[in-house]
Length: 259
Ligand code: ADP
Image (cartoon, rainbow, N blue to C red; front, side):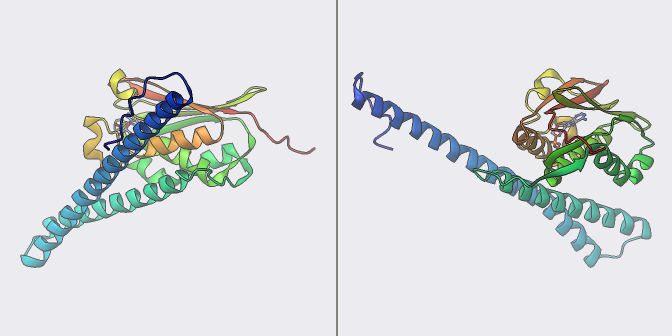
């Protein structure tokens, strides 16, 4: 620390060297702070569900409870363990994506089918909230990292359900032009303010009203990283109380189907 910042006001090589040294120090300090706050967030996110699980199991073990209470407590334990499992899964994806050169496993995938499959996997939650999904998916066969890209649909669709109103709607459109593929996921949910929209791709960021949803605040930062890796971009348009639209643009690396 005593070396930093180096104060050498010269325009020669020594001056340049001291400047790049200072920049390096600044970057290291920034990384160190980011690492500390990351560990802090992760520990906190593990701690609160664990405390709930511990508290409710102790209650169940130490006293007689009615059937209604039993069900209620088990539901909390179930919800909190799912939250922990989800957090662990997302952390694993995140740490693997953080490798300097992520080894992408590119293969051909039928994008529309993959999206339909994700919708099907959420059928029970859609029914539970009586949400109707409409979609218009052009057949698109593309070269992508299949596992990573399926994470994207999973995150966007699960958010569109989680942050939607009971009896709400979701529209999903997959279209293409000569040079790009466009995917739009639109919902009639709680929406967000402009201030929140600017931060939702940051790790651990959660809009205050979403805190009770038991999310991790990691999903969208993972989505953004995956889309970047594929050379695409993601945009969000949202209005509080009205709904949210996520739009993804991917470069069209479609493999023409033979025949
Ligand atoms: P989380 O695990 O909290 O859902 P995400 O990274 O997926 O984390 O999303 C970050 C935050 O962005 C969420 O906490 C939520 O407040 C907001 N958000 C994401 N998707 C939507 C959506 N479809 N509608 C409204 N808010 C959303």
